[in-house]
Length: 182
Image (cartoon, rainbow, N blue to C red; front, side, top):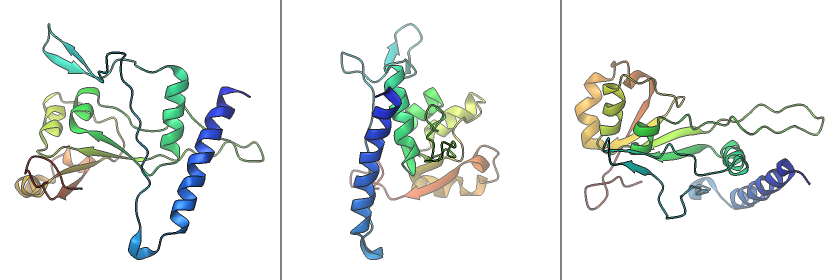
C-alpha cells in the first residue's frame, strides 16, 4: 500500500465515525465533530522564541511531508479549521487544502473541499497586528471570533478594508472575562 492509500484509509475511518455520529442526531440535538491536530518539537514546544528579535514564530517546520499531507487530508473532510489569534497574526497561514486530493471511483480528480478558517481573537488585537504590518490575509474568508464588547467598539468601522474581507463573530466572554465562551 502507498502512503496515499494509508492516508485515505485514515480519512475513510474518520468519515465513517462522522457519518455514524451524525446519523443519531436530530435537529434539536446537533453537535459538532471535532478532530484535534497539532505539531510540536521534541521538547514539547509549538512555537519558537527568537531572543534576538523578541518575536515568536510557529512558522518552523515541525512535521514531515506525510504528516502535512495527512493534515491537509483531515482539513478536506472538516467544515472548519480553528486557530488562535497569535498563530493567525504571526504565521498568516492559508488554512486550506493544497497537499491532498482524492479521486472518485472513475479515477477523476474530485474538487477539493475547503474548510472555513475560524480564528479566536478575543480582543481583535491580532487582526490589528496584521493591519500594522500592512499584510494581506492569506486565509480565504476567515471568521474572526471576538468578545461582544470588542465588536461593539468596531462595528461602526465595518467598512474598513481589512474588516471587509473577514466575518467578525461576536461571542460572549467566558466566566473569567478573559477568553471566549464558545
